[in-house]
Length: 391
View 1: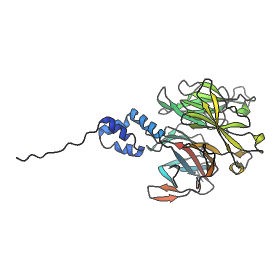
View 2 (view 1 turned 30 degrees about the vertical axis):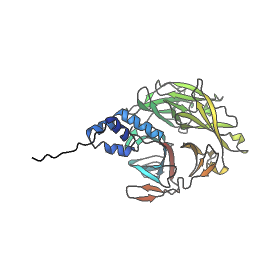
View 3 (view 1 turned 90 degrees about the vertical axis):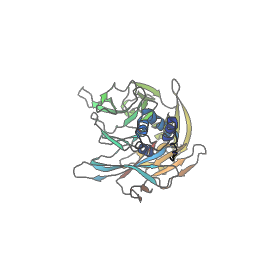
View 4 (view 1 turned 45 degrees about the vertical axis):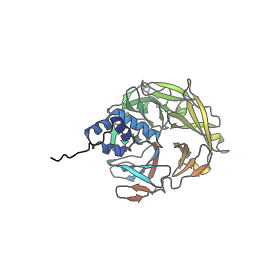
């Protein structure tokens, strides 16, 4: 009798498999769910999802680009878009690559600045529509509309993670008329927990809030005060704790020739971009980046000062001007001015234009191996820092 020796398949400990799979890109990790039930259970486990997210954050984050082409449709008021395309772009990439595309049959209105948290992208529109998407897992959810806002000029939304409940929350403010019969309004606040379909009203913020995109840092969302509605400058930011859903005050940076304009988040730290005050803008334009120290009470440290060219300030047809958007890109700063972008090296202080940053850039579609460019006046480009995840 002939005995045939069969070699056993090599054994890999679960810890090693966990370590290998958690380092895969999200798309590859999702595919690995189909290998066997054990891998499906491992990759679906919240411990794996959280570990994969931490590794993704530690790696060099990419830039998410959302170009939206608008058109006029008979059934809609104003401009609408029927497609939402998400592209990623690394620091050295010539072309941005499409990672997810979603058709929206009903159309959406013109968008405001998207916000990012743990691989989830929240896209608000000026018509107070809210869409949450994970481009890596291709999950796409439209949230219910909140309470009507009677001051559409001031409309922004916050998005963050509540560590006490292990849930993601969406927060927004809105203005309602006072009940005294006057034309004055009062600032209200409400929260929606992802996975539910109901907005819950909280206590009112201590000051009326401004339509500036807030920042989520360590379980809290930071907002700016609507100064024209206050009178005397309180010189504070409003901090909303996602765990107890209460407000506290955080002092503003001690800047003199500049004023807080909007927030930036860097590796779990709250940063603030402060632009030249209007009365100094004719002498020299600059932006200061301040970092909030996690002390009690919070203090601020000026990290760098960036000179700004007059060409980077875009005037509005109705008056006023649009300042460059400042965001961190790896260890440098990216200043986005309309359709152009400039990279500022914090260490050397050098500024270089990013060739083909937005409008003149090629956008690659891997589905048909083709490149496209977004042209025309009814195209808006939105960018955000992005770390893919399985959340």
